[in-house]
Image 1: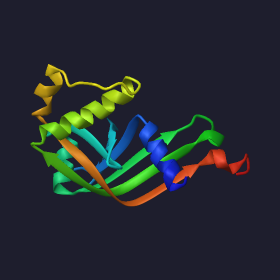
Image 2: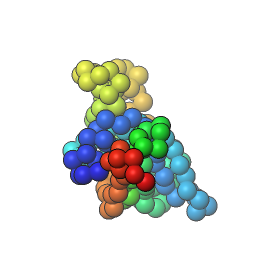
Image 3: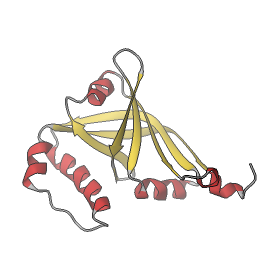
Length: 145
């Protein structure tokens, strides 16, 4: 994919596969909803979640977004990088939550509700700073593999 196509794919995607390094050295893989803010992947989770503990200890992160059901439709994007864990920024947590909700609501503006505000104080944001990006798009192969 071109850089522009990668950006469009990321903006349109839903569930990101996020891998961090677990406490015993094994990959810790989770599925996360995310928002793109200022061109960077952001997701929010409880500050005590295992993925946050992992990323505090070792900020290496890999994120993959994929789509397609048939081989000739497969496409994907992998972003490897450093995770920045942002804690204590309720406004940023709410911004990420709103970005995710906008996707779910078809682009309608979403105001944080009382439950989200209460949860936000217990959450951290993870911002992914890319160091390596690669992608594939089998739709461009024209049936020749």
